[in-house]
Length: 241
Image (cartoon, rainbow, N blue to C red; front, top):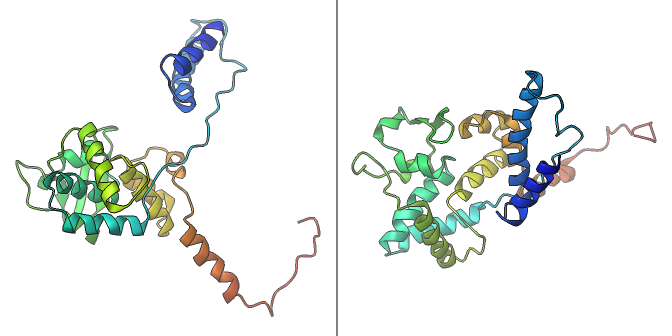
């Protein structure tokens, strides 16, 4: 237990890991030690009684109006590097693909209007039907690929300049495109199970972190109160309900 406390302090203070990263790392160690106890290699689990908690985090995403701004910037900009980065970024916003998967995407991954691809990170196979927005961003491939992205760091630097030109103040990296796709898909009413498969998640709980309700969705849902008919309303007789 002393080691666990010292290692936790080391990750927070020396490595500057965020609390959720620390918890994720300790969970991996906890799994190994639990297996060791089950197999009789250890007499006692030092994690017994220790709770590993995650902090609630918000995932940045772009709304429809911000996506429109980026599409307009893509049409009007004369800077080739911004075009080179913004086009695949928007494509990822409309498909949910990660940076590595967009970078490797070629004609061989498109079958009858659908992306069929083994994901770089998890090796899971995803099947993503192409919507009209995504199709409009696919140009003739070069050297077998649709997009010629620079390295991730350079890409994020160009995106920073693009957001500034578009008047978007959010801190945007390429991975925000994936958050955008997930959040907007759920707010469009696409079932979480479907969004989970489109993203290639093995666990639907991973998808649930995107289940934010946008203000526009809240307004539309609350309009149902204005449309409700109360003449047949039966009040609840249980005062403690």
